[in-house]
Image (cartoon, rainbow, N blue to C red; front, side, top):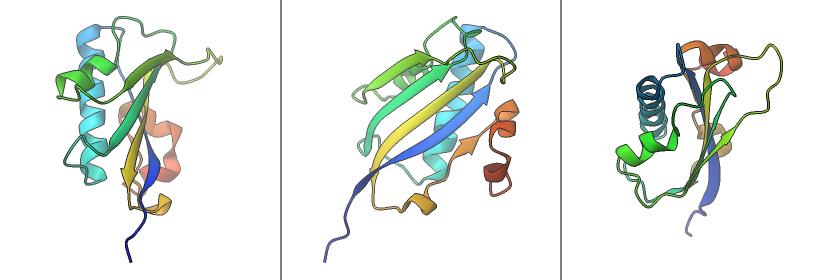
Length: 127
């Protein structure tokens, strides 16, 4: 009997020191590569779509450009701005990667880098 495939969300986040296009793309690229490696994704074909968000203090470029530079030319990508909640982590880039997989929810590895580790300390301890 064949195992079913599901669309699973893989979450990730990172930060940059300042609003600079080069820094934003570098951090996003680092995050995407870590998310792919941690979840054993070796081809972009299983990726259904990727949503990127940035905090309102980041507006120098679209983080999706980092995905395009990695070769994700046919993956649907969308960028949005986060809700400006007071006293939240500044200069943050968040990613929701939706993938077709046979992995269970508990097998998915979410990745938080740099200052974004503070967002999910429960997950960081498992990395």
